[in-house]
Image (cartoon, rainbow, N blue to C red; front, side, top):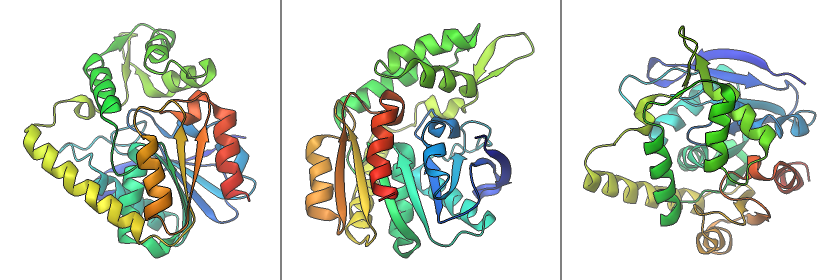
Length: 284
């Protein structure tokens, strides 16, 4: 099964790249995490495509979507893009699966339009992040400020250090679709360097994150649709305590799935376990 590639108008005058896996059924939209792109879902999408109309989005600054000259890579801007994707494909009500950064955009969208979600899957993300994962991701971003690679395999080896539990097939695919070849034969990341740069005043960033955190908790509290929280058993981003709070105290109709042999990047660490957990939710 091969997806159809589309280029559509996003927010702020940007053009977004979208993979359409199927055209029949209730729409199911897939949003990847930071530093990933739409092919993150290549193992999972064919499993649900016979039952849903499946779309996977390259979010702004990633994959084959435009970079934002102004560096607007916040959850609100990505939720704006999601609204544009839905408009382009004439989608009103749908199921959303969001991993990490994509899940944050999904929670902001849910706060704006709770009635438009028929279901929500939050993959290893919640309103509050574990400090351990914040430090790890910051270190990885510093290692990739202006990287060049001699081959796809060289980048795949770097990814194997950053994703120690990732399957070799998934990591090579991540490397293949995350790079573009330059005229001199070297490979560079497709993602915008602004995504990996210093975001300015740390105190202002802290206050913005606190406000965003509260908005995401508020969004989950008023969300009526069935919601699945997926946590990698070895995650350093979504703590057990936050996952339990989301499901037991905040969500009206929430459930939790913990995927074994997986850290933060659940879909690449344990593709089969991810498919089973999310499939049980979206396929019944």
